[in-house]
Image (cartoon, rainbow, N blue to C red):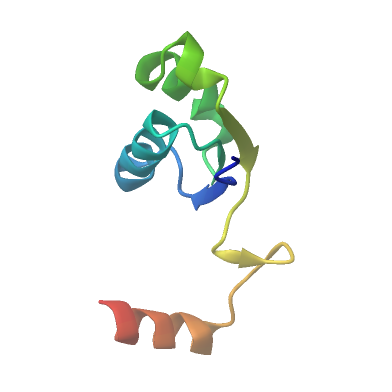
Length: 84
């Protein structure tokens, strides 16, 4: 039985790495997204063994931008006010 796949944004950061490792340890493939594409290879070599690496696909994505443009200032203020 398939357990699906997981999508993790910020996949190569601290929390993203922990979540990715937990999910792949349970056999759940991960689609990881992050804006730091220049660090993908180093992260993969440092954090994953050969078997784990087969369960992770990494893609560039910057969720702080919408269609290539930064979020409008009002949205940024709301975000900061809500989550800080």
